Length: 198
Image 1 (cartoon, rainbow, N blue to C red):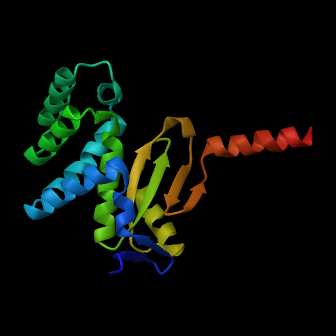
Image 2: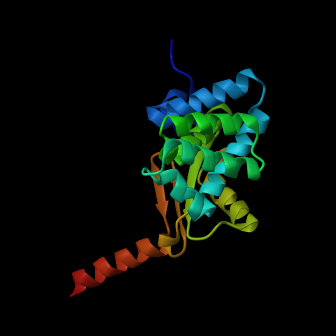
Image 3: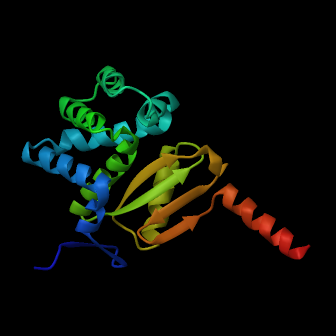
């Protein structure tokens, strides 16, 4: 039997199974299926997006997630305390607890990204990974959706990430296509051009 695929904007076909590959995909698939079985997708998916944004915004939280010297019980307790204080539901807290006990906290962001990709594929959407130097404004999101629609990606789920090292501009990846308008990339191209002219 042929594996289900997603066609977006008539330009790209992605096997749904491909977004569930590797360790992040396996964990993400387990959470998606658990939430679907319990009719909790409407609760879990927005909370997963909010947790991914928390990871991007909080350097302290990221430090706890990536600190491999932290005792497993202390790390689990710290992360779950933050999640409870931030109002995350029981399903997300239990899931993150499992990830912590399995010593996979450093992969939590990747797992959440895989979950968003799986959810988008199930809805028949393409995932656009957008990295910006600062968080996008609502107007920038609307403009980005419009530009992506013009490029043939009418059903797009935007995953946002902040990377101050870009200095400005955006890096957008949709499937195998990469659009890099970051200031860092422009400066690098300018540097190479100047070296070539010397």
